[in-house]
Length: 323
Image (cartoon, rainbow, N blue to C red; front, side, top):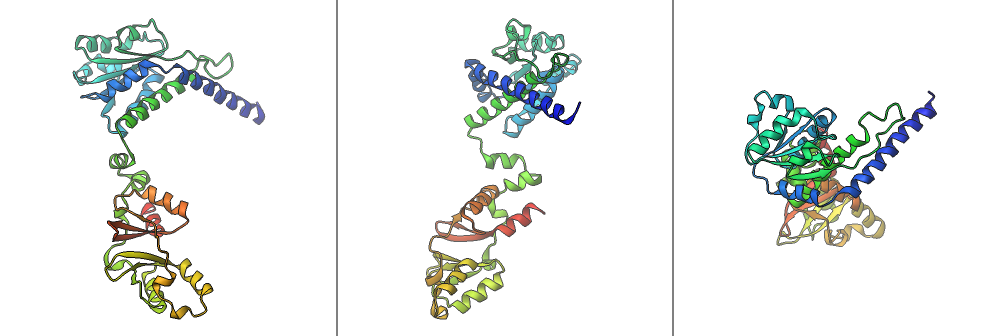
């Protein structure tokens, strides 16, 4: 099998799974909406159960739900039959997936759930299955061709991809309905680079006397000294009432030198940018970086009611993210 054949085979797998995902997209109906409504109103936890490949994918689905603030865990059907049924409580919702819908390992969980009137979201491609018959919400997965040639089309591939995608659909739809946002996500992910990106800008902004500030009547000499001593390549301009009225960057200074022959007769108000970009202190670092890249700038003012609270520089952000 040469490299060309290997790439061809890989692309066939991807194309088969794309076809399967399109079928899944077309199959979504009122039952999916019922599932979202049930999860939205939940007072307990979401318990995910499955067998084989489905169990592995449900672990990811459960983890994603937890990451959007929905308490969730997975329950092994074998363990459930040996005492772990006690983990299921009356206000919980079971999400059970089985492509055949008739996996005997799930029977103990299904019986226990029906006995205690615990809601079940059943996911299966078999409309006549035991799982679907006992489920309160019945999500029917489309039957799809597994990827691979005729000797390999029994390996769960396209069907597994569809289950994974369905889990993402549930999570994102539920997060949207719950008005979940990046700030809330960051609170649940405080560690690692992801957590740092979702930290508030207040964690990295410069405050107090460390902010290079000049008055609108300050001389060019004063501005140069302030920018140099601040080591940020910029200075904030305030009027006599300490209201922010402008911003001077290295770029503004260079443009002024090229524009005015009598540069040393000018004041801060003559060369400053009059509408500097500003953000609130609870702005997320990831959003601040996006704004800097969009505006092609390296610093942002942090303000409240047009009063200066801090200054954040791209170097400070990058240093924080790489620490």
